[in-house]
Amino acid sequence: MKKNIMVWMLLLSCVAATAQVKTLQVTVANSWSEDKQDEPVVVKLPAQKKVGFEVKGAKVTCGGSEVACQLDDMDGDLCADELFFLASIGGKETKTYEVTLFASLPERNVPARIYTALQLRDKQDKHPDVLRVEASGKSDIFNDIYMHGITVESELVGYRIYFDQRQNIDLYGKRYRRIELPQTQFYTSAEQLDDGYGVDVLWAGNAIGCGSLKDWQNGMPTNWSNVAVRGQRIVTSGPLRTVVEVYDLGVKTVDGATYDMHQYYSLYAGHRDMQVDVELCSAQDKMLMEKKRFCTGVQRVGSTADEATRKGHKSQGFVKKDGLAASWGCDYPDMGKKQLWAPEPVGLAVYVPKEYVSDTQEDDLNYLYVMKADKQQHIRYFVSFCADKEEQGYHTAKEWFSSLEKWQDTVNHPVKVKTIGK
Image (cartoon, rainbow, N blue to C red; front, side, top):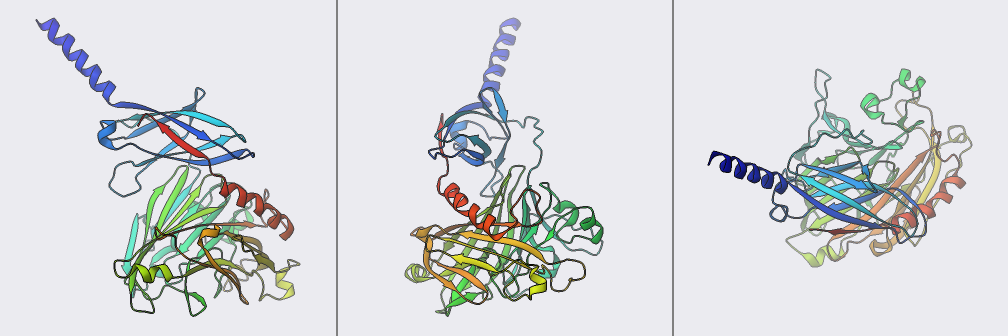
């Protein structure tokens, strides 16, 4: 009798163990003729009731080789919603990946290729990491946030989004392809500069910077001053992608209506470009929101600098009807630290798919796109830049501008992902 009980217990434990693993097949198809490296692949996980357990771990393989991956909780309920990995896939090629989901957390040593930070400034200079900061729209806590806002970095570039009414995107350029911001924190010292570290490479001033999202009022870009609540949040922080949220609640229009706005910034390992998704919500007047306009673009870098500051880099750029705008120029990255930080030649770019473009504009400081949301109250566009200081980068306007059509084509040809076994 005891022997039978032990056999049954063993069988039940095997069934339970088997029930804690689920396997999916994921096909990734590149319909474009060009090869793709570090192509982002997002797999929506099946609902927990279909899996039979809460997913805590995952393993991805292709052709018998393991592929680095990460599980992400996108809606903040502490449960994984998405699996993310990067694919290297040839032109017109389809690859099949095997995904194994686990109820436990298998040990994985995935090197971090992404850095994400939202930190507070404190008297002890410890700069504690937090996941979210939220404040009244009337509160000025810009200087209470270390690095002045949420910050993301790949091996190629770094970005930060200011925690204030400007919500400008600031840029960190590097000589070497590596993660640096844990050391420099956007405030590179003279010693670090001598050691080859990167630095803040753009001063936006009153310009739009590189891909910053602005309100469009009275025919010009306008900051987000009239909001009830503003906040920033880390959605997922790596090791292969980061997604961060910048949100404004109770944004008031000139007509007195209000709406909420959520901006999601996604940066992938191996990429210099960043994807921006804007989601709008209005419970008051949807017709009014259909008429609402926003804007983004790139500034004319170095347009106000003198010849000595430009160092031979003529300020030049364009804004095209097909959604691609770019500029190249040279100027001081911080007007208050000219003795420490020399002028930096940089190239800026933004790509807005045509369905979101309402108009193009130019002024003395900017190349601009006026944007409209789609029927789902969503806007998507892409931001990119290069710094002349990069050893493996672009060093002239001609080189930078020539690279952008390929970038535009790459964005327009995402891989198609199909999951079998849900």
